[in-house]
Length: 138
Image (tube, rainbow, N blue to C red; front, side, top):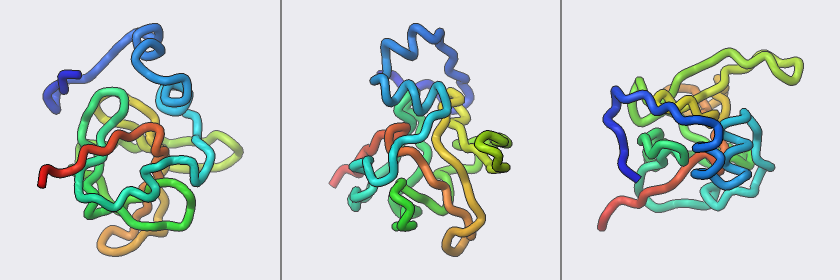
């Protein structure tokens, strides 16, 4: 898949997203679903590398910012850059939370909470289904 430049907004039809993604990836990223806790193999990923958007390939998080939050979802304390992830208000499930979406393609990634480690104090709690992992070359 070719990766568009950072300034390129990816827009596809619903049919295109459905054909590109697995049913679970589609449900989570395009329909704002949540995967079951402790089901993503990315929870146990310890190699150095970059976590990218499963929909468009945009770099989202670096392994150096990943930590074990004990929640069952891959967690990070900051995105790879200030413009990689966009915040959106989420008032579903009778709660008020901050949803995170890929800035390039609007894929639902997860939510951010103010209970993470230093230096940011944030916990980006991501659906592993929404991410791919690209290990650094050794």
